[in-house]
Length: 387
View 1: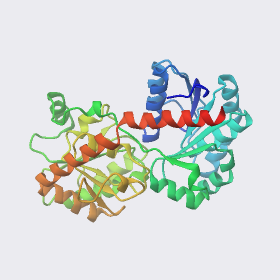
View 2 (view 1 turned 180 degrees about the vertical axis):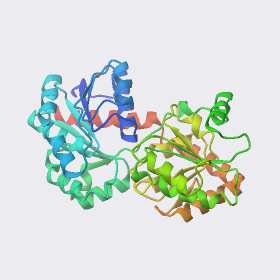
View 3 (view 1 turned 30 degrees about the horizontal axis):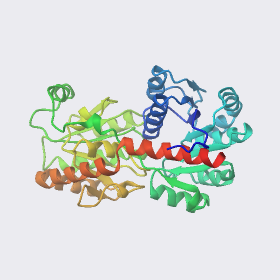
View 4 (view 1 turned 90 degrees about the horizontal axis):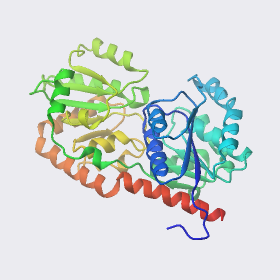
C-alpha cells in the first residue's frame, strides 16, 4: 500500500523500440493496460512503426506516438535512432511523466538520455535478452549506465551477463520475470474450433504435431527445428511441423523445407491470436532458440499443458527443470532436438506428466497477476525514494 507521504504514480511514459509482435512488446502492453485501468495516465512512444500491440493500446484510449524509424542494421541503424532523440525529448516535455520506462536496447539508450535532458528523475531500462552477437551494445550500455535510475532484467541469467559485460553492479539490477494470463488458457482439451483450425492447416485427425511459436528471426533457431524434423519423419511418417509466427526469415525457412523435401509436412501458420488454439494442436512444443531472455512462448506452451523441449539458453533453465517439467537441449543441435522430441512422442504418459508439473509451476510462480504486482511495487518503491 502506498504510504501517505509517497507521491502516487499518476503519469508514466513507456518507450519501446517496437510495438509489433514480440515478448517484450507483450509485457509492455500488459503493464500499460493494467496501469491505464487503475487510472494512471499512460502514454507510449514506439521508435518503429505502430504494430498490433500499439494498435491494441490505442483502442483502449492510450496514446501511442510512432517515430517510424527504418530498421537499418548495425551502426547505421543505431545512428538513425539517435537522430530521433529530439522527437523523444519533445514528447517527454509535452507529457511530463514521473517515470520513463523503456524496453529493448535502442529504446533504453534513447530514453535514458532524453529523460536526463528533460530532468525526469526516474527512468527504467528493461533488459529483455542477451545480445551475444552485438558486443558494442554492452559497451554503450555500460557507458551510459549512470543515467539509469533502475535496471530490470527478465531473468537471473540476463542479469548476470549484463553485470559481467556492461560492468554494472548487481544491486542496480532487479529481476522481474514474465508472467502469463492463465485465464486465456483455461481448459486443455481441443474444441470444435480447434479441430476446424487443424483441418484448415492440413493437420489430419490422426496426425502427430510438433511445433513452435516464434518471431521468424535467426535468433529463434527455427532452421535447426526443421532439420530435426527431417530426422523424426522416419519414425513418425504422419508427423507435422507447425510453425506459428511471422518474420524476415519466413521465405528462407520455407526454402529450407523444400531443399530437405519436407515442405508438404512443414506448415507455416503465420501469426495467430489467441495462441492457445495452435498450442492445443501440438503434441510437443519446441523452443529451438540460439539465445533468449525469458521466453513468453515457453510460458504459454506450459500454461496450455503442452510438453516442452527447449534450448538451454538465457533464462530458459530458470523455467524448465530437466526431466521434471520439460527437456533441455544444447542450442543449434538438430540431433539433440530430434532425440528429445522423439522421447516425448514415444512416451506420451511421461510427456503428459511433465506437462502437468509444468502447468502447476506456471500457476504458482509465473502468473500475469504476480508479474503486474511486482511492477506496481517497483514503481511505488522508486517514487517513495523521490518523496
